Length: 116
Image 1 (cartoon, rainbow, N blue to C red):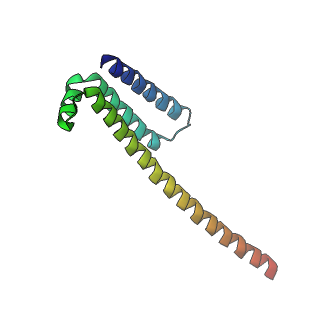
Image 2: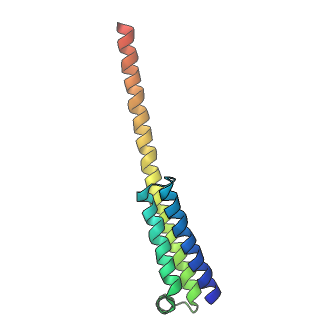
Image 3: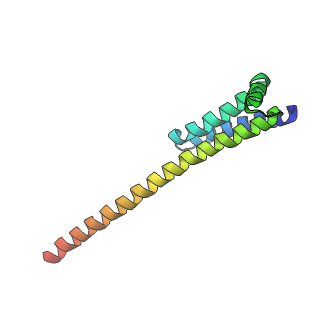
């Protein structure tokens, strides 16, 4: 159990550093980094607090606290991925609308040049 929690701690610290480095280098926008930072901080807290992890495992009816941690990790990242899917869908819709408006403007501009 301790080895899994130590690995989870190291991975969550690595994820925090990676996200902060990416924000600093402008590879990821700040508003998108918040989800990753929140998930990795939650993992860091859970991997370091054995009592809380044991309580969550008992609450979920699991016999092994590391299993609860893996379940929580899966759930957290599922929520983050869902959030980004919604963002990507909105961006795709906005791009389609912008392309349609651009096509209309190009058509109107071409029609004016042909009438002159």
